[in-house]
Length: 209
Image 1 (cartoon, rainbow, N blue to C red):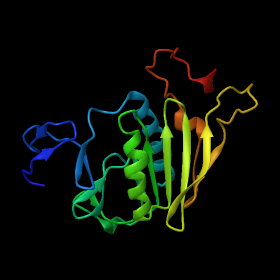
Image 2: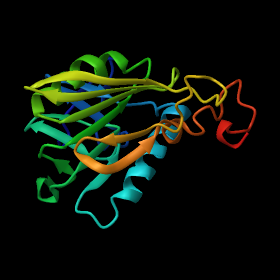
Image 3: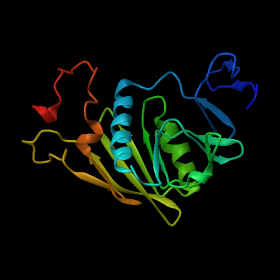
């Protein structure tokens, strides 16, 4: 990008290389700064999923990336998914991925939820990403979309219930990725420790009570 001047939607300008690295996305000609850093809850959930998937993918040609791989849709449009799994390393050059991933996950936040649900979801759909997960961390909810006939269809929705005494308890429900049948994670693993640092956190994870 050289010394291209970036005009953000917040109304101020930055010069890459002069004010330090800033993670950005470019969608439909508009650049979005992905700063400040996401919440602690967001980071914990991201880390949980990355750890679970990367451990299970050891020895495989596939790799999982967490917020550190630019997914290029064209020469001048790119996204930075929270989690992306790719199996075609030849499609990566200079930190830019130009292939078609089978799986992408986005964790919603108040500042990005609209963009994730509308703009980015539409871009992933058009790019042919087979499976998309959207996670709402505060409500501990997961939506799973599969690509069918070129359009995303909401196939499953989960709302975590950690109380083993509750009839809707589902923390042990194991979720399989469609494109990776042997790659799984439970709802409890996804949200494990995500309350850490919150006002009501008492220092004890529910699974250890």
